[in-house]
Image (cartoon, rainbow, N blue to C red; front, side, top):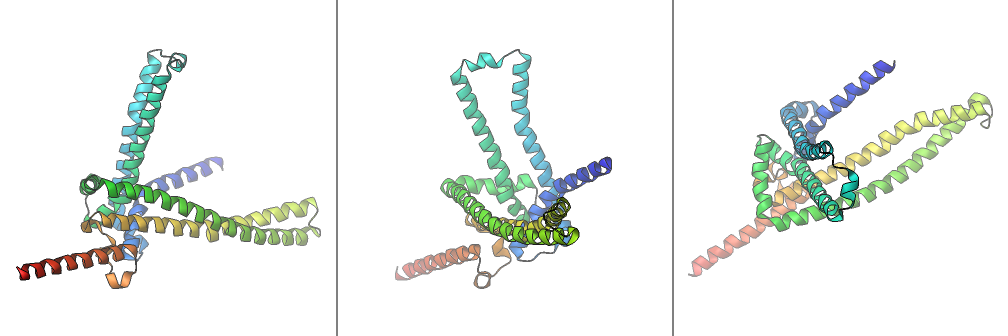
Length: 286
């Protein structure tokens, strides 16, 4: 049984690793189209998901191998930790380099998921092609990129607070329900809920009922709500960097969608029309 359980756990873990990048594309496509066809979208984006998985594995290897090689070389050369402890400047420099290294890795990894994945959904191509389309726009608008990073951090903090509050409320309701069921089961099965058997059966019944309800009715809806909102914000922000990357605008009409990207797009188009009309009037006066 232990071997079978281990095989099942490994199989589920491998399946999750394989499908996780695929569902990045499925989620983006579903938000953009405001429509979800799970099997169709998995088949459509399976190749892109495998490309993303390969890129992230290569990215992790590219960032892990150099420091691992340096550490291995120091160990093999006989350099001891005591010798480095007496050099605070060296330790500070190594710490700064390590922090910068982690920041660069996090930047590349997160922007690959947040911006390159939508670019691949919009125009096809691989991950490298997506970076070639996205990177020039990020580089040409450093101020807007910095604002996006700061706002994304604030949005993440806000979503964490909302998620925590919703979880507490939901857990309280589910806990009271599970406690009531456990007390009832313990009383019925043993005749008195204070006996050892009644308490054991009551706790077991409460867990059997409460844990699945907590996952299905609280954790999953909160995750869907926060993740969908975050990805919608990222897609709307991507549209600000260029209309060719405005994925939401490819499927929705300005007057009907009611989403952030459509409002931003409508504002830009009104501004362009005003600019064009003003220029034509100026040309007419000349």
